[in-house]
Length: 380
Ligand SMILES: Cc1cc2nc3c(=O)[nH]c(=O)nc-3n(C[C@H](O)[C@H](O)[C@H](O)COP(=O)(O)OP(=O)(O)OC[C@H]3O[C@@H](n4cnc5c(N)ncnc54)[C@H](O)[C@@H]3O)c2cc1C
Image (cartoon, rainbow, N blue to C red; front, side):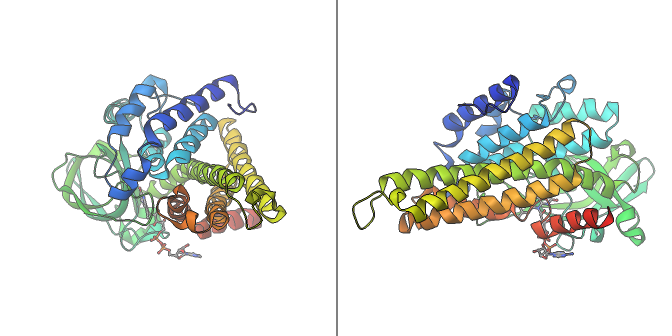
């Protein structure tokens, strides 16, 4: 059943994504998790279902859904598999910077390419620059009418397959974060190569790669926004992306709760009664349900603010922190309820625990979210 607190159109999209997940993700998630193979097929299926580039306005060929709908869709995908959700939802990371700072010409040109290919990338992180984006060492130098980019990016989601990437580089390293700029780089540019592929604990079938830039030449008009606006663009992008990561946390928590309930109702305790007949188990399930619902509502509240044009940076950081911590905690609780069966690789809960961890780390660790939140509440 769709969530009745959503509008009829949001409910339609929630059900569409739920059916899509049941048909295309759940049946193959464990197999892709084991092999670590990238599920390129899911991008084509998402295109057919009208579930690709959900943040891109319809005039540029995207789905143009509101933020609450986008989050509801990501939540359904993550219910099936967080790696698939990272691949399909992570696309937003390349679309948001264009929405934030793209000129009309840039939007027309590059949205059409991202929509056609189905995958875009966002490369900010470097070996020496994770939480501290100001330490980016990749450089961009203007030579005539071209920018020349040099450096190494790492942990770049989908960048082994993305046809358009937003790459952050410094045009003046002496300025720190103020020297950071964002550039639109096409996959086929000479000098841009994909380096090592990461093998990960969780979201194993998502594509996480190193990007090597050696004298990558791009036209001057591939600068996104103004020179020196890179940090501002990156932070606004992360504001938009964090509620989507939060939705992955909610999807993981919902799946873990469903698996734990199924187990607690069918598995018998030492007295021959279902586990769920023990109040300690029933109360734990109730707590898991409370946390999952609270996480979902925190995400929705934040996105309703966003869709109303109100500030939502603090709420995005809160939703990301609470929902991803909830995903981790509820998955671990489900494993506890299921005992050895939850720990076995035959159990989906074992995968949920592994997939939940990264949600607390990427798009700003939950410690960095607390820096954002405390910075705002202490200033008010
Ligand atoms: C699977 C995966 C996909 C990713 N996808 C992308 C992507 O598409 N694009 C991209 O640009 N990046 C991506 N990342 C990178 C990710 O966003 C970073 O890993 C993350 O921001 C943290 O940076 P770091 O790993 O360098 O940790 P560090 O910054 O080195 O932090 C290490 C630890 O120190 C803590 N810490 C750091 N600074 C502070 C502080 N001031 N106060 C308190 N604690 C602090 C952190 O919370 C963390 O616990 C991805 C990473 C992974 C693993």
